[in-house]
Amino acid sequence: MNKITVIGLGPGDFRFLTLEALEALEKAEKLYFRTHKHPLVEKLYHRGISFESFDEFYETEETFEGVYGRITETILNAAKRTPVTYAVPGNPFAAERTVEMLKEAAVDIEFIYGVSFIDAILSSLKLDPVKGLSIVDGLNMGRINPRGINIIIQVYDRLIASKVKTALMAEFPDDHEVIIVKSAGVLGEESVRKVPLNELDHREVFDHLTSIVVEPLSPHEGRKDFGDLIAIMRTLRGEDGCPWDREQTHESLKKNLIEEAYEVMGAIDEKDAVHLEEELGDLLLQIVFHGLIEEEMGFFDLRDVTHGISEKLIRRHPHVFGSREADSAQEVEKIWEAVKGEENPGKLHEKMAALSKALPATLRATKVQKIAREIGFDWDDAAPALDKVAEELLEVREELQGTDKEKLELEIGDLLFAVVNVARLSKVDPELALDRTIEKFMTRFKYMEDSPEGESKGLKAMTLAEMDQLWNQAKKKK
Image 1 (spheres, rainbow, N blue to C red):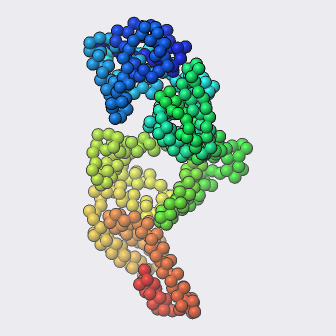
Image 2 (cartoon, rainbow, N blue to C red):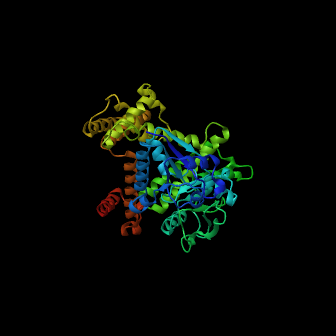
Image 3 (cartoon, helix red, strand yellow):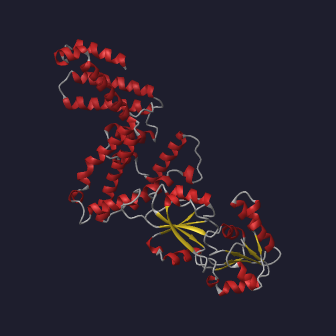
């Protein structure tokens, strides 16, 4: 295959066409332009430069990907017979899908730099990209950074502009000014116009040389993201921040972390999405708080935290990010435990000892039992575990006859441990099961207090038999 030379024509003004590019255009044996809709075309004609363009593909193909595929195929076929020169608007490496496809397919390919239309936009608007610049494809709107400069390219028509507007309105106020830039860098043709975001697609005529520039929001405007939360907390912990926030330590915040986690669980049980959103925010605040305390001490920061958990997720999901296969949740659990075992190859009792003693006892018991299961020290189902509960119950009965409180405590602990085993083997979360029972008990107790008998006589004046009768009535209600 003969050499393919890819040339960048610049944003459209002859001033931005490099001497190297002009020389290559004049010497080209077989010259293609991606499109003849470029401000330089007329001047190049006057210099005697002739070429073929691929504009017809834009009319006959149904998708842009189809257009780019046809262009690439045509160039590669031509290169089998003769050296080919292919010219594209701007810089060959800026938003040129055909160039990417040629790079993947061609062996002998040379590039001649062209000034990007992005450079022209930055120069025209006097914007500094160092302050944060995102280039976003209007045909496939990705992540918008409301705290940086966003240049949205390929806004060919009003339909694309309407989609861009909808995406931007999720992050920016309706009246946020956006800049419509047409023919950037082309003398006599460049147009720069500011409009409110909600009027972006109202009157403007869009074409292949149109881009949208969105300048950043101020720190206190718009929707706040994770980075904004961190910045706010850094301010609160800073010298001119909040005295209370500055005084907090890991130890002082421990109870808050636990309380917020339980508040999240409560919101989940309530099935209240609004409440859950709020409580997740409160819990996230605690995580950020602890992360910033460590950052200030120089041990790790929140990026280390997110990096660590991301690496762990990738490592423990080889069936998604690797070559392993898993067709069921049960197979996934086996893979997860196997990877954990590879990460921590020590003895099982060391794994048990490494479990946090701050965990709720039922959760810690479940984890200990799962570790023991790794070597088969477990029952296959809940039936024999339930027999163990009966055995432990007898031992508790025996100790109730004695006076050794410590031994009674140990036997009750054995009973609870056995019950946790039954729950685990039955795929029931013992903590949640107990919590639901507590709620059920409270509901029935309320029925007893609110009943006519409870209101008139009062539970305290009733006998246990009378209260049992009310309790049985409550059970029938729910």
